[in-house]
Image 1 (cartoon, rainbow, N blue to C red):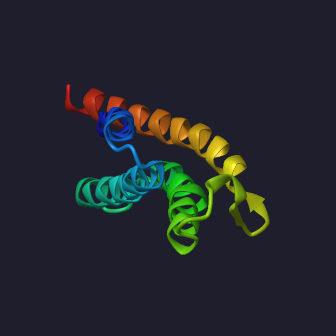
Image 2 (spheres, rainbow, N blue to C red; image 1 turned 30 degrees about the vertical axis):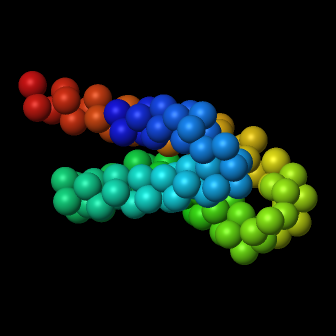
Image 3 (cartoon, rainbow, N blue to C red; image 1 turned 180 degrees about the horizontal axis):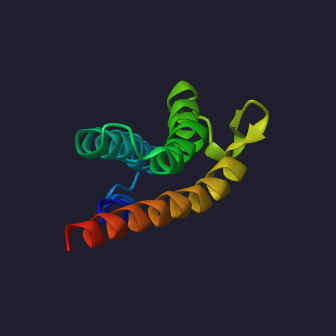
Amino acid sequence: MIQALVIVAVIVIFASISEKQIAATVAGVLFVVMPLGLMAWEHKQAQFKEAVWYAGVLQFWVIFALPILGIRLLNWGVPFDQLTFWGVPGPFLHSWSSKSYMVMMLITAIRWYRLGKKAV
């Protein structure tokens, strides 16, 4: 699953890029671009008929991935633990984004499992 590969890629990014702000930005771009790719693929497959799946992806993308990348880019040079989005501290957003990402992965796994069952 692409979402699991993104986690591995992020680990490699942080291990290979010593400047943490750049590593976090590259990882953030992955977390923004990957859901877009998944939504484009799903649209091609199901034509927006999978509302629960879209909600699962969009909750991560809109509530966490975009804001976190946005506050990083708009506040370059400021430590992440000093950043906020609509009064919510950056570290709190990041903590909840991990949980949100797991929800997105679970919903995607269920969706792909169902697709596999239909193909049999």
